[in-house]
Amino acid sequence: VKFIIDDANIKAIKHLYEYFPVDGVTTNPSILAKSKRQPYEVLKEIRDFIGEKADLHVQVVSKRAEDMVEEAGTILERLGQNTFIKVPTTAEGLKAMKQLSKQGVGITATAIYTPMQAFLAAKAGASYAAPYVNRIDNLGADGVSSVKRIHDIFQKNGLKTEVLAASFKNSQQVLELCAYGIGAATIAPDVIEGLIKNDSVKAAVDAFTKDFEGLCGEGRTMK
Ligand code: E4P
Image (cartoon, rainbow, N blue to C red):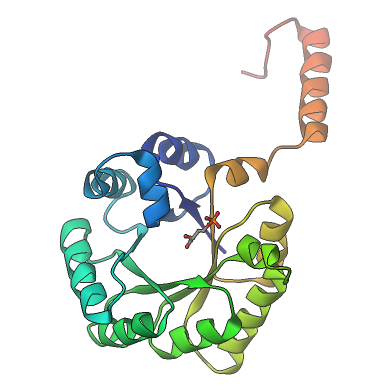
């Protein structure tokens, strides 16, 4: 399962790249708005930091297919051909996906709330389909089960599209989908940090330190 950072804060991205096994960055217009900076300035900084080969997913804002395709061209020109174009899975979005996939562009179908949207996006040529786990939960449905179903639909139909599960709010949602072997998960920094936060682990490590220092003296290690 690829782990992608769902954020545009360069400080947070650098920190997570230092400590966690992460594989790229996704953004959306709301995430970019939080930076209060010019979108391409922020995205260029991210691209320069993660390198030209790493996964970077950038969303189009237009509503009409023709404009989405044009926007995709500008994004690729400014951020590199390896950039995945996030396209909302509306009817116009599907039309844009069909055109972009013919041009060989990497597409991430986004704003997915139903397995049918994911199936159509996959058939339209998306490389990734991004179902919104927590937002589906908030509708009173089961986000994790929807993602599993989408994964199964892709496999049963021989579709190469990978699931890029999104909108996580807790570790359990992430773990369950890792256990299921989905393609990728895009996760906000606080949720990534939470994946490893555990008071029992901290207590165990503190006890090891205390015992060792009792033996060899304060601040001593195996160095
Ligand atoms: C990713 O494609 C989505 O834009 C993002 O994960 C949505 O997350 P949110 O529900 O926390 O806004």
